[in-house]
Length: 448
Ligand code: SF4
Ligand code: SF4
Image (cartoon, rainbow, N blue to C red):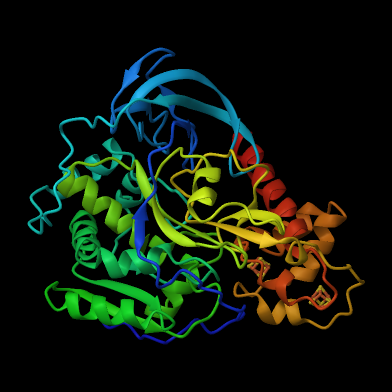
């Protein structure tokens, strides 16, 4: 099959300033903290159910919570120690949820994990065994969506996957965790991609990387000569190219129909960090217990990229990066475009957390909001061909049926509309309200 490739998606998008302050800072392991808080909902779907109790001794890599439904995921201990309690905690989403609290004692790993540095290229597992391994070891999408990977790999019988798309775009300003991973773990990531290809029964994978990461593009291009079927594509820098629908359009010129999933185009999309986690799970038997997190901000003395045990408090990352700057006004989990402000620095890191950004107070204040001047800039910026001003207005007035007919659920929540609006209108805030209400309405309708 021939895929027509363009260098970016055609409709909408913006060019926020970059500030990739940590792109040249190698990944370092963050010291194991004295205690961790491991949330039971670190993925899309039902929260996991604890299989340990207060007082239990656990080892690093041991299952501590089991998937609680088809769309759910196992959770493993990222440390060894004693379960001090099972309680609730406010997590990065801003909601209180259940979590397992562990006091760290030493660092004793379960025996089944291969901790050697050797790279294993031979893929011995069969496709169904790969999917089962991803399920067992709690692999979820690490690009932010945290969709359980075993579910994404199990393509419905009436659909056909013809291509694997790998997202190495990292279009959010500031974030560099994927960039460093591609540079430092390129070979393992490509083996991870081959594993995903095997699980999906596809012969072709396209890796999209924006051209502001020329070193990663060159490195993976060179390595990919040894991997049949994997091609590396340099893409024009434009936000939100990392959104699944935009990346599919860029690389294959196919469009995901409104309200449908990428598989309708024959594509399945995974992130580079997920491919690396799949490599570790399948070849090293390692559960998803740590990930690379960028800690950055203009006032930090030592911003960097850290390999972090899941559940480590955000303040341990801030400490490693030189401590909390006096001028900090806001701390955001994720990128500045789609991330969420944190309520406090004790919040635990989780599987979906790719970065922490500390913004100075001067950049943390919302500007004045003026009336809509009908300039249509938000429409031009929207990559999903929506009318953001209309959606926001209708949501504000609780006209949710109208927002539904105007395809509010197609919104990818990229924030390009709010970013462009000269009147400073909080378009995405209202659109999120409308979208979540419409999704709830549709769910209730389906139950009738
Ligand atoms: S309406 Fe949604 S998809 Fe369109 S620009 Fe705004 S946030 Fe992005
Ligand atoms: S960009 Fe802002 S001012 Fe312009 S039409 Fe959209 S909402 Fe109105």
